[in-house]
Image (cartoon, rainbow, N blue to C red):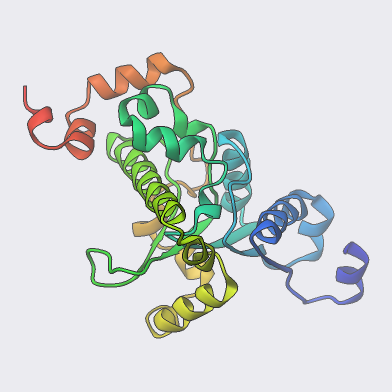
Length: 252
């Protein structure tokens, strides 16, 4: 790779894949961006476009990934169908999140597996904004709001996982498999292309309404590591209780 870049100055480096290929492209992009020689040869970030990727790493991997994004070496567009169970694999986090949200929060399940990069999620039905897609970026636990949002999305993934399992039980496995197909991803991307056509990946990375201050130079991420940390945070926060359990539980 480095010899090709050296022989062809001015070129950019993109890596793309679907499913297992998406996971491998994420790992390749990460290690390429971390390599000093790659950084010397490229004028732009290494860019990953992953489609239907399972989880690749844990919280420590995410922190290392964001460090490369923060330094301008790496960008990642992760495209996922909301109903695609492969994007929820391994399923430890989603399963516990849907069965017991309290256990998910107190036990720090969200620390087990972490997706990374800019997420473009599409689904069959519209979100509250009237569109079938939304763009998000993984936040840390520096605020109660971001922590509550993290758990909310964990629970939502769990619900999607359970709904897909129900379809399998009802002999609708072909439908579930279809959510993971390249054809279905292409169909949904064609639907939203006019809405997202003016966006660039670099532009999304500069959008504070999406990334917050996570990518600011010198930013120090906050990650709770112990069960005690999570319980203390949850029990002492009206914001988290209101966001997760509803307004009634947030009342004193």
